[in-house]
Amino acid sequence: MTIGSIRPVKEKKSRKNKQPVVDDQSPLLPTKHQEDGFNGASYSGAVFNLSTTIVGAGIMALPATMKVLGLIPGIIMIILMAFLTEASVELLIRFSRTSNSVSYGGLMGDAFGNYGKMLLQICILVNNIGVLIVYMIIIGDVLSGTTSSGTHHAGVLEGWFGVHWWNGRFFVLLVTTLGVFAPLACLKRIDSLRYTSTLSVALAIVFLVVTVGITIFKLINGSILNPRLLPSFYDLTSFLKLFTVVPVMVTAYICHYNVHSIENELEESRQIRSVVQSALALCSSVYVLTSIFGFLLFGDATLDDVLANFDADLGIPFGSFLNDVVRVSYAAHLMLVFPIVFYPLRLNLDGLVFPSARPLTLDNLRFALISGGLIAIIFLGANFIPSIWDAFQFTGATAAVCIGFIFPAAVTLRDRYGIATKRDKILSIFMIVLAVFSNMVAIYSDAYALFKKNSSPRE
Image (cartoon, rainbow, N blue to C red):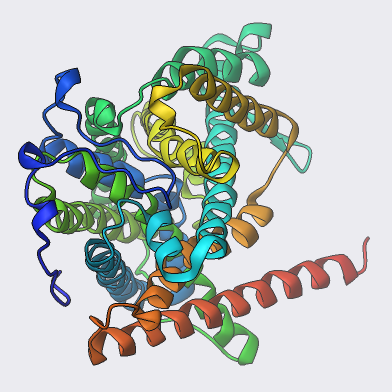
Protein backbone atom coordinates (compact mmCIF):
# COMPACT_ATOMS: atom_id res chain seq x y z
CA MET A 1 0.00 0.00 0.00
CA THR A 2 2.07 2.87 -1.27
CA ILE A 3 0.43 6.16 -2.07
CA GLY A 4 2.46 9.34 -2.42
CA SER A 5 5.70 9.96 -0.57
CA ILE A 6 6.77 11.20 2.82
CA ARG A 7 9.37 13.93 2.95
CA PRO A 8 11.99 13.20 5.57
CA VAL A 9 12.50 15.72 8.32
CA LYS A 10 15.74 15.82 10.25
CA GLU A 11 14.15 15.92 13.67
CA LYS A 12 12.29 12.65 13.04
CA LYS A 13 15.22 10.40 12.15
CA SER A 14 15.64 8.42 15.34
CA ARG A 15 14.48 8.41 18.91
CA LYS A 16 18.06 7.83 20.00
CA ASN A 17 19.14 11.25 18.75
CA LYS A 18 15.99 13.16 19.52
CA GLN A 19 15.07 15.33 22.46
CA PRO A 20 11.55 15.16 23.86
CA VAL A 21 9.13 17.24 21.77
CA VAL A 22 6.47 19.43 23.29
CA ASP A 23 3.72 20.80 21.03
CA ASP A 24 1.67 23.35 22.89
CA GLN A 25 -1.11 23.08 20.30
CA SER A 26 -1.91 19.43 20.95
CA PRO A 27 -3.09 17.10 23.65
CA LEU A 28 0.23 16.23 25.19
CA LEU A 29 1.53 12.91 23.93
CA PRO A 30 4.28 10.93 25.62
CA THR A 31 7.65 10.91 23.96
CA LYS A 32 10.60 8.75 24.79
CA HIS A 33 12.49 9.90 27.86
CA GLN A 34 15.96 8.49 28.32
CA GLU A 35 15.83 9.02 32.07
CA ASP A 36 13.05 6.49 32.67
CA GLY A 37 14.89 3.70 30.88
CA PHE A 38 12.49 3.55 27.93
CA ASN A 39 14.51 3.46 24.69
CA GLY A 40 11.63 3.36 22.24
CA ALA A 41 8.96 0.91 21.14
CA SER A 42 9.76 -2.04 18.91
CA TYR A 43 8.46 -2.39 15.36
CA SER A 44 6.42 -5.50 16.16
CA GLY A 45 4.90 -3.92 19.26
CA ALA A 46 3.84 -0.90 17.21
CA VAL A 47 2.27 -3.13 14.53
CA PHE A 48 0.24 -5.08 17.09
CA ASN A 49 -0.87 -1.92 18.92
CA LEU A 50 -2.10 -0.36 15.68
CA SER A 51 -3.70 -3.65 14.58
CA THR A 52 -5.57 -3.82 17.87
CA THR A 53 -6.76 -0.25 17.35
CA ILE A 54 -8.19 -1.29 13.99
CA VAL A 55 -9.72 -4.67 14.81
CA GLY A 56 -12.52 -4.06 17.29
CA ALA A 57 -16.25 -4.59 17.07
CA GLY A 58 -16.20 -3.63 13.38
CA ILE A 59 -15.08 -7.11 12.37
CA MET A 60 -18.45 -8.53 13.45
CA ALA A 61 -20.39 -6.22 11.13
CA LEU A 62 -18.40 -7.01 7.99
CA PRO A 63 -20.10 -10.32 7.04
CA ALA A 64 -23.42 -8.42 7.00
CA THR A 65 -21.96 -6.00 4.46
CA MET A 66 -21.53 -8.99 2.13
CA LYS A 67 -25.28 -9.55 2.41
CA VAL A 68 -25.85 -6.00 1.15
CA LEU A 69 -23.14 -5.82 -1.54
CA GLY A 70 -22.68 -9.43 -2.53
CA LEU A 71 -19.42 -11.31 -2.11
CA ILE A 72 -17.39 -9.88 -5.01
CA PRO A 73 -18.14 -6.14 -4.56
CA GLY A 74 -17.92 -6.61 -0.79
CA ILE A 75 -14.37 -7.97 -0.91
CA ILE A 76 -13.34 -5.27 -3.40
CA MET A 77 -14.78 -2.64 -1.04
CA ILE A 78 -12.83 -3.98 1.96
CA ILE A 79 -9.58 -3.84 0.00
CA LEU A 80 -10.37 -0.38 -1.42
CA MET A 81 -11.10 0.93 2.06
CA ALA A 82 -7.74 -0.39 3.28
CA PHE A 83 -5.96 1.56 0.52
CA LEU A 84 -7.95 4.71 1.27
CA THR A 85 -7.13 4.37 4.97
CA GLU A 86 -3.43 4.02 4.17
CA ALA A 87 -3.64 7.07 1.93
CA SER A 88 -5.35 9.20 4.59
CA VAL A 89 -2.84 8.15 7.27
CA GLU A 90 0.04 8.90 4.89
CA LEU A 91 -1.34 12.41 4.42
CA LEU A 92 -1.50 12.85 8.21
CA ILE A 93 2.10 11.71 8.65
CA ARG A 94 3.47 13.84 5.80
CA PHE A 95 1.71 17.05 6.84
CA SER A 96 2.53 16.43 10.53
CA ARG A 97 6.24 16.22 9.75
CA THR A 98 6.18 19.36 7.63
CA SER A 99 4.35 21.31 10.35
CA ASN A 100 6.40 19.74 13.19
CA SER A 101 3.17 18.51 14.82
CA VAL A 102 3.45 15.53 17.18
CA SER A 103 -0.27 14.75 17.35
CA TYR A 104 -3.38 14.71 15.21
CA GLY A 105 -4.76 17.54 17.33
CA GLY A 106 -1.60 19.57 16.78
CA LEU A 107 -1.93 19.11 13.02
CA MET A 108 -5.57 20.24 13.03
CA GLY A 109 -4.61 23.20 15.22
CA ASP A 110 -1.82 24.15 12.82
CA ALA A 111 -4.17 24.00 9.82
CA PHE A 112 -7.39 25.41 11.26
CA GLY A 113 -6.52 26.93 14.65
CA ASN A 114 -8.00 26.06 18.02
CA TYR A 115 -11.47 25.45 16.61
CA GLY A 116 -10.13 22.80 14.25
CA LYS A 117 -8.29 21.08 17.08
CA MET A 118 -11.34 21.20 19.34
CA LEU A 119 -13.58 19.78 16.60
CA LEU A 120 -11.24 16.81 16.19
CA GLN A 121 -11.10 16.24 19.95
CA ILE A 122 -14.91 16.28 20.20
CA CYS A 123 -15.18 13.77 17.34
CA ILE A 124 -12.71 11.47 19.06
CA LEU A 125 -14.64 11.75 22.33
CA VAL A 126 -17.95 10.93 20.59
CA ASN A 127 -16.45 8.07 18.60
CA ASN A 128 -14.40 6.44 21.33
CA ILE A 129 -16.92 6.73 24.16
CA GLY A 130 -19.57 5.23 21.88
CA VAL A 131 -17.24 2.44 20.80
CA LEU A 132 -16.19 1.57 24.37
CA ILE A 133 -19.78 1.50 25.63
CA VAL A 134 -20.64 -0.86 22.76
CA TYR A 135 -17.65 -3.05 23.66
CA MET A 136 -18.81 -3.28 27.26
CA ILE A 137 -22.41 -4.02 26.22
CA ILE A 138 -21.22 -6.84 23.96
CA ILE A 139 -19.07 -8.29 26.75
CA GLY A 140 -22.09 -8.21 29.07
CA ASP A 141 -24.30 -9.84 26.42
CA VAL A 142 -21.77 -12.61 25.76
CA LEU A 143 -21.02 -13.45 29.39
CA SER A 144 -24.33 -12.70 31.13
CA GLY A 145 -26.90 -12.91 28.35
CA THR A 146 -29.43 -10.44 27.03
CA THR A 147 -33.18 -10.18 26.53
CA SER A 148 -34.55 -8.96 23.20
CA SER A 149 -38.23 -8.79 22.15
CA GLY A 150 -39.19 -10.93 25.13
CA THR A 151 -36.68 -13.65 24.26
CA HIS A 152 -33.75 -14.27 26.59
CA HIS A 153 -30.44 -15.27 25.03
CA ALA A 154 -28.38 -17.01 27.69
CA GLY A 155 -24.82 -15.84 28.26
CA VAL A 156 -21.85 -18.16 28.44
CA LEU A 157 -21.68 -18.05 32.26
CA GLU A 158 -25.41 -18.75 32.51
CA GLY A 159 -25.02 -21.73 30.21
CA TRP A 160 -22.15 -23.12 32.25
CA PHE A 161 -23.31 -22.47 35.81
CA GLY A 162 -26.98 -21.51 35.63
CA VAL A 163 -28.47 -18.19 36.76
CA HIS A 164 -26.80 -16.74 39.89
CA TRP A 165 -26.35 -13.24 41.29
CA TRP A 166 -22.62 -13.34 40.59
CA ASN A 167 -23.03 -13.95 36.86
CA GLY A 168 -25.58 -11.18 36.41
CA ARG A 169 -24.73 -8.37 34.01
CA PHE A 170 -23.96 -5.67 36.59
CA PHE A 171 -21.63 -7.81 38.69
CA VAL A 172 -19.81 -9.34 35.72
CA LEU A 173 -19.15 -5.92 34.20
CA LEU A 174 -18.09 -4.54 37.59
CA VAL A 175 -15.53 -7.34 38.02
CA THR A 176 -14.34 -6.90 34.43
CA THR A 177 -13.99 -3.14 34.91
CA LEU A 178 -12.07 -3.39 38.20
CA GLY A 179 -10.05 -6.47 37.26
CA VAL A 180 -9.21 -5.79 33.60
CA PHE A 181 -10.11 -2.32 32.33
CA ALA A 182 -8.90 -0.22 35.29
CA PRO A 183 -5.44 -1.84 35.62
CA LEU A 184 -4.76 -1.64 31.88
CA ALA A 185 -6.02 1.95 31.77
CA CYS A 186 -3.43 2.90 34.40
CA LEU A 187 -0.56 2.27 31.97
CA LYS A 188 0.84 5.61 30.81
CA ARG A 189 2.64 4.49 27.64
CA ILE A 190 0.85 2.89 24.72
CA ASP A 191 3.85 0.61 24.15
CA SER A 192 3.14 -0.97 27.55
CA LEU A 193 0.08 -2.54 25.90
CA ARG A 194 2.06 -4.38 23.22
CA TYR A 195 1.68 -7.80 24.86
CA THR A 196 -2.07 -7.46 25.44
CA SER A 197 -2.37 -6.19 21.87
CA THR A 198 -0.57 -9.26 20.55
CA LEU A 199 -2.92 -11.49 22.54
CA SER A 200 -5.91 -9.49 21.31
CA VAL A 201 -4.94 -10.04 17.65
CA ALA A 202 -4.37 -13.73 18.42
CA LEU A 203 -7.89 -14.02 19.87
CA ALA A 204 -9.35 -12.39 16.74
CA ILE A 205 -7.48 -14.99 14.69
CA VAL A 206 -8.93 -17.75 16.93
CA PHE A 207 -12.40 -16.49 16.03
CA LEU A 208 -11.42 -16.51 12.35
CA VAL A 209 -9.90 -20.02 12.47
CA VAL A 210 -13.00 -21.50 14.16
CA THR A 211 -15.30 -19.79 11.65
CA VAL A 212 -13.21 -21.06 8.72
CA GLY A 213 -13.15 -24.58 10.18
CA ILE A 214 -16.92 -24.70 10.67
CA THR A 215 -17.54 -23.36 7.16
CA ILE A 216 -15.19 -25.88 5.52
CA PHE A 217 -16.84 -28.73 7.44
CA LYS A 218 -20.29 -27.64 6.27
CA LEU A 219 -19.06 -27.15 2.71
CA ILE A 220 -17.77 -30.72 2.67
CA ASN A 221 -21.07 -32.17 3.90
CA GLY A 222 -22.99 -29.99 1.44
CA SER A 223 -25.07 -28.01 3.92
CA ILE A 224 -24.05 -24.55 2.66
CA LEU A 225 -25.91 -22.84 -0.17
CA ASN A 226 -24.17 -20.97 -2.99
CA PRO A 227 -23.44 -17.39 -1.83
CA ARG A 228 -24.82 -14.33 -3.60
CA LEU A 229 -21.92 -12.85 -5.55
CA LEU A 230 -23.50 -9.54 -6.66
CA PRO A 231 -25.88 -7.06 -5.01
CA SER A 232 -29.61 -7.27 -5.52
CA PHE A 233 -31.49 -4.00 -5.95
CA TYR A 234 -34.81 -3.24 -7.59
CA ASP A 235 -35.54 0.42 -6.84
CA LEU A 236 -33.82 3.64 -5.77
CA THR A 237 -34.10 2.86 -2.05
CA SER A 238 -32.47 -0.56 -2.40
CA PHE A 239 -29.75 1.01 -4.58
CA LEU A 240 -29.00 3.74 -2.03
CA LYS A 241 -28.80 1.09 0.68
CA LEU A 242 -25.59 -0.14 -0.95
CA PHE A 243 -23.84 3.04 0.27
CA THR A 244 -24.77 2.39 3.90
CA VAL A 245 -21.89 -0.09 4.15
CA VAL A 246 -19.31 2.71 3.74
CA PRO A 247 -19.62 4.09 7.32
CA VAL A 248 -19.44 0.51 8.65
CA MET A 249 -16.21 -0.15 6.75
CA VAL A 250 -14.71 3.22 7.67
CA THR A 251 -15.43 2.45 11.34
CA ALA A 252 -13.78 -0.96 10.90
CA TYR A 253 -10.53 0.69 9.77
CA ILE A 254 -10.44 3.76 12.02
CA CYS A 255 -7.03 4.04 13.70
CA HIS A 256 -5.90 7.60 12.92
CA TYR A 257 -6.17 8.87 16.50
CA ASN A 258 -3.44 6.44 17.66
CA VAL A 259 -0.94 6.83 14.81
CA HIS A 260 0.91 9.78 16.37
CA SER A 261 1.02 8.18 19.82
CA ILE A 262 2.60 5.05 18.34
CA GLU A 263 5.01 7.07 16.18
CA ASN A 264 6.14 9.18 19.14
CA GLU A 265 7.18 6.06 21.04
CA LEU A 266 8.87 4.24 18.14
CA GLU A 267 12.62 3.78 18.49
CA GLU A 268 12.90 4.66 14.78
CA SER A 269 10.03 6.98 13.95
CA ARG A 270 10.76 6.66 10.22
CA GLN A 271 9.25 3.18 10.47
CA ILE A 272 5.75 4.48 11.14
CA ARG A 273 4.60 4.23 7.54
CA SER A 274 5.79 0.63 7.32
CA VAL A 275 4.02 -0.02 10.65
CA VAL A 276 0.78 1.36 9.21
CA GLN A 277 1.10 -0.71 6.04
CA SER A 278 1.87 -3.92 7.95
CA ALA A 279 -1.04 -3.39 10.35
CA LEU A 280 -3.45 -2.66 7.51
CA ALA A 281 -2.25 -5.70 5.55
CA LEU A 282 -2.77 -7.94 8.60
CA CYS A 283 -6.19 -6.50 9.45
CA SER A 284 -7.52 -6.42 5.89
CA SER A 285 -6.53 -10.09 5.50
CA VAL A 286 -8.46 -10.95 8.66
CA TYR A 287 -11.40 -8.83 7.46
CA VAL A 288 -11.53 -10.45 4.01
CA LEU A 289 -11.39 -14.01 5.40
CA THR A 290 -13.93 -13.25 8.13
CA SER A 291 -16.32 -11.69 5.62
CA ILE A 292 -16.01 -14.53 3.12
CA PHE A 293 -16.39 -17.41 5.56
CA GLY A 294 -18.91 -15.65 7.81
CA PHE A 295 -21.17 -14.94 4.84
CA LEU A 296 -20.67 -18.44 3.42
CA LEU A 297 -21.62 -19.94 6.77
CA PHE A 298 -24.82 -17.98 7.38
CA GLY A 299 -25.75 -16.61 3.94
CA ASP A 300 -28.69 -14.22 3.84
CA ALA A 301 -29.41 -15.12 7.47
CA THR A 302 -26.26 -13.22 8.50
CA LEU A 303 -27.17 -10.73 11.23
CA ASP A 304 -25.80 -7.20 11.61
CA ASP A 305 -23.65 -8.55 14.44
CA VAL A 306 -22.50 -11.96 13.20
CA LEU A 307 -21.66 -12.94 16.78
CA ALA A 308 -25.43 -13.28 17.36
CA ASN A 309 -25.51 -16.05 14.73
CA PHE A 310 -23.37 -18.18 17.02
CA ASP A 311 -26.17 -18.22 19.59
CA ALA A 312 -28.01 -21.01 17.69
CA ASP A 313 -27.34 -24.66 16.89
CA LEU A 314 -24.74 -24.87 14.12
CA GLY A 315 -25.75 -28.40 13.18
CA ILE A 316 -22.25 -29.84 13.56
CA PRO A 317 -20.48 -32.03 16.14
CA PHE A 318 -19.33 -30.06 19.20
CA GLY A 319 -21.38 -27.13 17.93
CA SER A 320 -22.20 -25.85 21.43
CA PHE A 321 -18.54 -25.98 22.45
CA LEU A 322 -17.44 -24.12 19.31
CA ASN A 323 -20.12 -21.49 19.90
CA ASP A 324 -18.67 -20.89 23.36
CA VAL A 325 -15.10 -20.74 21.97
CA VAL A 326 -16.13 -18.08 19.45
CA ARG A 327 -18.06 -15.99 21.97
CA VAL A 328 -15.51 -16.18 24.80
CA SER A 329 -12.53 -15.49 22.52
CA TYR A 330 -14.30 -12.46 21.09
CA ALA A 331 -15.29 -11.13 24.53
CA ALA A 332 -11.67 -11.51 25.68
CA HIS A 333 -10.51 -9.79 22.48
CA LEU A 334 -12.71 -6.76 23.23
CA MET A 335 -11.43 -6.61 26.80
CA LEU A 336 -7.90 -6.24 25.45
CA VAL A 337 -8.91 -3.75 22.75
CA PHE A 338 -10.51 -1.51 25.39
CA PRO A 339 -7.27 0.10 26.74
CA ILE A 340 -5.97 0.84 23.23
CA VAL A 341 -9.12 2.81 22.37
CA PHE A 342 -9.26 4.33 25.87
CA TYR A 343 -5.72 5.74 25.59
CA PRO A 344 -6.44 8.44 22.95
CA LEU A 345 -9.83 9.13 24.57
CA ARG A 346 -8.12 10.17 27.80
CA LEU A 347 -5.47 12.23 26.00
CA ASN A 348 -7.99 14.16 23.93
CA LEU A 349 -10.32 14.83 26.85
CA ASP A 350 -7.35 16.17 28.79
CA GLY A 351 -6.31 18.31 25.82
CA LEU A 352 -9.85 19.67 25.49
CA VAL A 353 -10.40 20.46 29.19
CA PHE A 354 -6.81 21.32 30.24
CA PRO A 355 -5.16 22.66 27.06
CA SER A 356 -2.40 24.54 28.91
CA ALA A 357 -1.64 22.06 31.68
CA ARG A 358 1.61 20.15 32.00
CA PRO A 359 1.83 16.68 30.36
CA LEU A 360 -0.83 14.32 31.65
CA THR A 361 1.68 11.56 32.39
CA LEU A 362 3.46 13.88 34.84
CA ASP A 363 0.33 14.72 36.84
CA ASN A 364 -0.82 11.60 38.68
CA LEU A 365 -3.88 13.20 40.26
CA ARG A 366 -5.23 14.55 36.97
CA PHE A 367 -4.39 11.24 35.26
CA ALA A 368 -6.31 9.27 37.90
CA LEU A 369 -9.34 11.59 37.95
CA ILE A 370 -9.74 11.63 34.15
CA SER A 371 -9.20 7.86 33.87
CA GLY A 372 -11.59 7.06 36.71
CA GLY A 373 -14.25 9.46 35.48
CA LEU A 374 -14.22 8.11 31.93
CA ILE A 375 -14.34 4.48 33.07
CA ALA A 376 -17.29 5.29 35.37
CA ILE A 377 -19.20 6.96 32.50
CA ILE A 378 -18.58 4.02 30.18
CA PHE A 379 -19.56 1.52 32.90
CA LEU A 380 -22.82 3.34 33.67
CA GLY A 381 -23.61 3.69 29.99
CA ALA A 382 -23.15 -0.03 29.39
CA ASN A 383 -25.43 -0.92 32.32
CA PHE A 384 -28.24 1.55 31.83
CA ILE A 385 -28.41 1.87 28.04
CA PRO A 386 -30.11 -1.34 26.85
CA SER A 387 -29.12 -1.03 23.18
CA ILE A 388 -27.22 1.78 21.48
CA TRP A 389 -26.61 0.26 18.07
CA ASP A 390 -28.77 2.86 16.26
CA ALA A 391 -27.10 5.73 18.13
CA PHE A 392 -23.68 4.14 17.55
CA GLN A 393 -24.31 3.92 13.79
CA PHE A 394 -25.47 7.56 13.73
CA THR A 395 -22.86 9.25 15.94
CA GLY A 396 -19.96 6.82 15.88
CA ALA A 397 -19.88 6.27 12.15
CA THR A 398 -20.29 9.99 11.45
CA ALA A 399 -17.46 10.89 13.82
CA ALA A 400 -15.35 8.07 12.37
CA VAL A 401 -15.58 9.32 8.78
CA CYS A 402 -14.58 12.79 10.00
CA ILE A 403 -11.53 11.40 11.79
CA GLY A 404 -10.60 8.96 9.04
CA PHE A 405 -11.35 10.85 5.83
CA ILE A 406 -12.75 14.36 6.10
CA PHE A 407 -10.16 15.91 8.44
CA PRO A 408 -7.06 14.48 6.65
CA ALA A 409 -8.54 15.59 3.32
CA ALA A 410 -9.33 19.06 4.71
CA VAL A 411 -5.73 19.48 5.96
CA THR A 412 -4.48 18.48 2.51
CA LEU A 413 -6.76 20.92 0.69
CA ARG A 414 -5.81 23.68 3.17
CA ASP A 415 -2.14 22.95 2.25
CA ARG A 416 -0.51 25.63 4.39
CA TYR A 417 3.01 24.62 3.31
CA GLY A 418 2.38 24.04 -0.40
CA ILE A 419 3.41 20.36 -0.36
CA ALA A 420 0.17 18.81 -1.66
CA THR A 421 0.35 17.37 -5.16
CA LYS A 422 -2.49 17.43 -7.67
CA ARG A 423 -3.03 13.74 -6.96
CA ASP A 424 -3.29 14.46 -3.21
CA LYS A 425 -5.99 17.05 -3.80
CA ILE A 426 -8.00 14.85 -6.18
CA LEU A 427 -7.80 12.00 -3.66
CA SER A 428 -8.86 14.34 -0.86
CA ILE A 429 -11.89 15.58 -2.78
CA PHE A 430 -12.86 11.97 -3.53
CA MET A 431 -12.60 11.03 0.17
CA ILE A 432 -14.75 13.97 1.25
CA VAL A 433 -17.42 13.30 -1.39
CA LEU A 434 -17.50 9.58 -0.55
CA ALA A 435 -17.68 10.24 3.19
CA VAL A 436 -20.35 12.95 3.04
CA PHE A 437 -22.53 11.22 0.46
CA SER A 438 -22.40 7.81 2.14
CA ASN A 439 -23.22 9.28 5.54
CA MET A 440 -26.14 11.26 4.16
CA VAL A 441 -27.45 8.08 2.55
CA ALA A 442 -26.89 6.08 5.76
CA ILE A 443 -28.74 8.68 7.85
CA TYR A 444 -31.56 8.77 5.30
CA SER A 445 -31.83 4.97 5.26
CA ASP A 446 -31.86 4.70 9.07
CA ALA A 447 -34.44 7.50 9.37
CA TYR A 448 -36.61 5.97 6.62
CA ALA A 449 -36.46 2.52 8.24
CA LEU A 450 -37.35 4.00 11.64
CA PHE A 451 -40.24 6.00 10.15
CA LYS A 452 -41.52 2.94 8.28
CA LYS A 453 -41.30 0.83 11.42
CA ASN A 454 -43.19 3.37 13.55
CA SER A 455 -45.85 4.04 10.89
CA SER A 456 -46.59 0.37 10.12
CA PRO A 457 -49.96 -0.88 11.48
CA ARG A 458 -49.69 -2.89 14.68
CA GLU A 459 -51.54 -6.12 15.08
